[in-house]
Length: 599
Image (tube, rainbow, N blue to C red):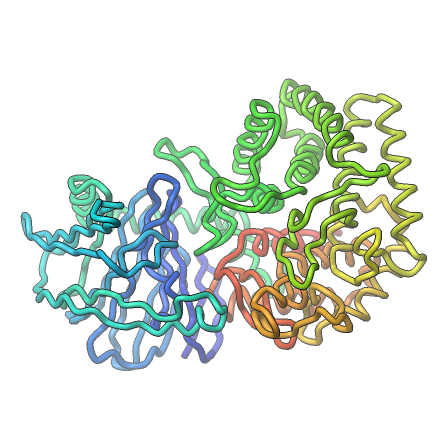
């Protein structure tokens, strides 16, 4: 099949084979993750309610569907053209929990539902009730537990010309991707609700029936105007963000990643930023660490608004929560906050009163960490508190870790700049000296004070605090690490390939968690390495830089979820695994390309 990316006036096309994913978002937390043959229970149409995601539509299955001839990603919508000349179009208007499905001719299809809260895999007590009101089909879904209603919502179907037949059949789905991830259940009964015939439909979802009905009517009656608005938005985005680069694929990947990242932002009813998803589909929470890494690639207004949310939280609560709901503690979030604060100050984006408050917050935070998170002068973290937050055979990276020292040094450095006080200069100098003494061998940087493992966290450390070593020393460290970490397809393993913990296959080997931070290649860190290698010696590391960027471009444009950057690849061979679309992967690709384009 052909895959075509069309971003305003720019195009990139390639012949490919695969069961690709497409993702659209509504910028209020809902999204549609499509696949012609669904391989994961996480696919489908979701809306956000009460800080949770609820799935309604699993898929739309054409009767007698022929093979796909072409997928066109217009970014505001996508189109699927089949060999029998049937054309399908999928669209979600911003601000609406509504999926629009159109075809170029009258077709019949099955509407497959799998109504559920995203992580609710219980298959019992699922009830669908059907009714028809004012030529609209209304399906009420209710999930009960222990004889009481757990949650419910409505799906409203609206079209000006259609026929339907209610089926109410349960169909067993086999989810191959979930099996690959070793993420049960691998199979699930979904609900073939009805057969529909027509060529233009809207499906609106809400906990309130009248709201779902109203949304369906508004979207249907204003569909042409909504499409024009979205096309205009794409044109404006392209004019503001198109990079000056001759490589067409690199430029298209840049626009794709930039647009993907902007669509990870979740807005409230007033249009204000509520947060940023770490990833779609299952990392659909507001992770502070991920957001603070990713915001660097947003527009200045978005960057400032998201940063100020964490600023207000820090100021009012004396800390930043690791994520919006149910996640592990993140020891690096506060350090990343001050890393971004320094950048916003240098870019003259923050107001003077905000800078003054940041200085106060920073001084209080340094007092706290010196008492509670410091050992023998080093920054110390608990198990699974770094970004490598999985455990296998006792490897959970607790203790004194290289990138955590870099984050602490950044805090001391900023405090010294903002206050001019000698004590912060001394803290920075003393820790820098100790890190060089206990971590730097002259050829390499240890991953932990008692751990000589070679890991790509050295690139993270450079990204945060490049002043730790001289350029020629970083060059030696990177050369030594690349000998152990380099993957021929253009990535970095998350631990030395010679380590006894290494696993080259995503979710393979002895445990599903083994490869995650002990083999899998993380696209965000690969892109971060590009920044470090370019700043250190762009000529010496030219081939590595080109290979990494090529792999990232391939992932964004031609693999996985088309137009989005995946979470990880297997180490053994290039692949698009993990979360379908990951914010920090997209953000670091655009930052890396920006760095490459600097003169």
